[in-house]
Image (cartoon, rainbow over all chains, first blue to last red; front, side, top):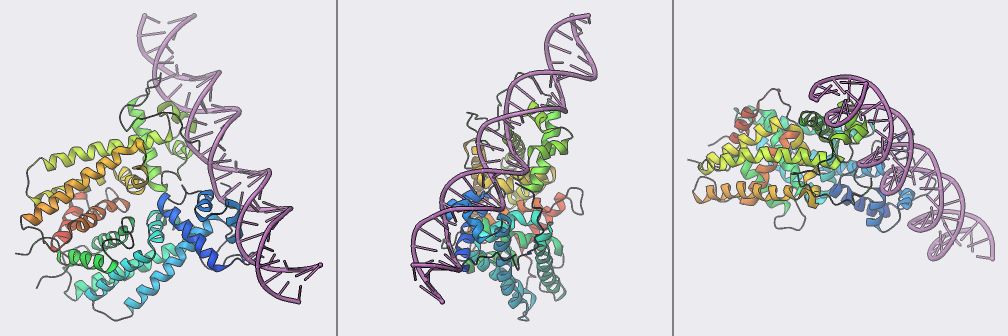
Length: 214
Length: 214
DNA sequence: ACCGTTCCCTAACAAGTGTTAGGTAGGTTA
DNA sequence: TAACCTACCTAACACTTGTTAGGGAACGGT
């Protein structure tokens, strides 16, 4: 793997447009195939030849549509995060109470997992190592906004007396965050439970606990 | 990466002993270094040259102690699982009630994370893909025992009236399992909270919920 | 002084990696 | 018909990968 010495700074937004003009529809098809392979085997264990095979063409042909393997990953993740934050921002702007905000965020999260299963799985596995690289700085930004939204809501809930004050808010935030998102590792769309049902069960557990009340 | 065509079937137990006799102490040092790098960058993104650099020797020298990169991974994971099940079996053999069993399993799990942080992180990231390979079949076995222990305890608790019956047991099992083990991704030994304190907080959340009771 | 053992290094290998330059078939436009 | 564009293939490139054969330095036992 030649270390990329060329100065690229896409950051998930504008690519260095090549002279040719690939169709966006075909791009999406290829990205979907790439996302599945990335999610199943991990980014660095995935070869471009494997992606190409899955998509029904040869490795070199991928470079007509994308300028590198890394930019495929970039586009997969940034597309997912854009859609995620569209949903989150709508929830956060709705002016709900803390408990209702948590409920809406959890439900929205499971819907995103339903729609972007592969991207979420990739995000789970790779974001920690990627966030340090400049190109993927938006992952770190997103993580900070994420913590602000969830942790802020939890703390507001404690202040307003709807969440228990004995719990360490940051610890609770981590537990809630992790449990929601690791669901992407076992969730299968069209399976036994839909996203809303999973969200209901999860909220029931995390809000009221699994123990029977006295 | 040459596909390993040689017939090795260690399965975490007996290796094909080479003519030489490397010291077990040195092996443990090198495995600790390897585990850190595997945990930080992922198994397949880790080169043996990086492991060697971290351990203070050259890549080829690792092959005096181990016969492949894969067998290092094998030894790291199987050592961890052996110790994990020693702890779990002790808990399961104690004849506790369902709630106390869950409490003990959770506490034991966080203690294992405290002691084998790197190995747990590797297990989290790689076990899904590894479990399919024959050499790592013990990972699949362990997963089945794991599910049996946790899910069985949850169902026993519902039958005995200590856990709420409305919750889907398998879904609850997944949530509980994931939340406990992903802690390895952010836990740092010697940090603000010790394993017992984290277990207490987690159990408080998952047993009684985060919402204030009426 | 000799041998054997332990531990590491040197130097290379074959296979696989991401990537690219140049070509080509088919469709669309002029 | 000619020019052009899209989408792919062919064939290679420079480099990295896990792994190995052979050698050597330090050391203890005899």
